[in-house]
Structures are given as C-alpha cells and as structure tokens.
Image (cartoon, rainbow, N blue to C red; front, side, top):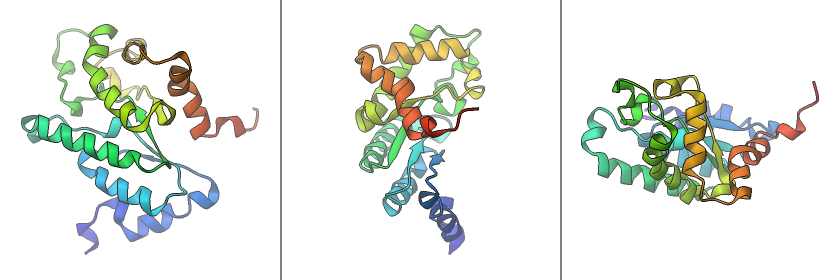
Length: 191
C-alpha cells in the first residue's frame, strides 16, 4: 500500500526524482535518523543524482528517543556510515542548534559560548566527518532556526573550533570548496 511507504519510496516521488540527474540538478534531503534507511535506498537507486543530507543526518534526541539515547545514537551512526557508502551523497554538518537534537540549550537562562558548543557538538561533527570524509562534508549554519541555541557568529565559531585539528586544506574544503563544487556555483553566470 502506498500509505505504508515513506515519501522517498513513493513511486510518484521517484518519478519526479528521476528528472533531477538528466537536468544536472541535486537534491537536499532533510529527514530524521529514523528515515535514513529510505534515503540510503534512494541514493542506491539513483547513483547519478547528487544528494546532500542536511543536519548531520537528523539525529533525534527528544521525546521517547531521549530515553533510548545510546541505542538511537548507534542507529544514527550506523545509518550515516551506510549512507556514506554512496559516493553521490554529501553531508551537511550543522543544524545542531535545533531543539529536536535534545541538547536542551533552549531551556538555559542565557546563550552558551562557542567553546562550550564546540565541545558538546564535536562528537556529532566528528561522526559525520569520519563517515563521509572532509571531502564530502559541507558546514552549514541552518539559520535562523539555530537561533534557538546561539547567534550566527557563535555557531560558526563553534563549528570552526570543533574542526580545528583538521588541516587548512580540509577546513577550506568543508567550509567553502565542497559547497561551491556540490552546488556548481562556479558555473553560475555573472550577475
């Protein structure tokens, strides 16, 4: 039954999705970690379509997922590693300021500094980079939604701090070159 499938497996969606690669278009995916298996199957079915997974794979950490933290974190990590086996998929690293991650920062009386956020976010940032490699990761701000946790400047400083141990070339790739390449920004006509 069609209603038993997720959107990514719906035949009508896939007919539309099949039109992306011939038009040299990419797809930004935004799913929670519980839906990554659908994205893995989609990436495998359309190996010529460039896909970027947003928000480090959407690890849920609220509601019932907060009570199964270790189990769900392991599921998220395993799914990210499986998704990374598809060379047509890149990973955006960011969105960690959103409430669904379960960090609880929005309940604090004041905003956290970038060093504290970097310390808390680094394990999630590194899981993504370990799975995809610096050559397929794109740092993202996800503003204004991440304002639930911090300012734009604090967010970027936290991400820079979290990856400070990488080489200058790797950081340049993650913060600039990979996005330019994935979205083919060099090919845009001059304004």
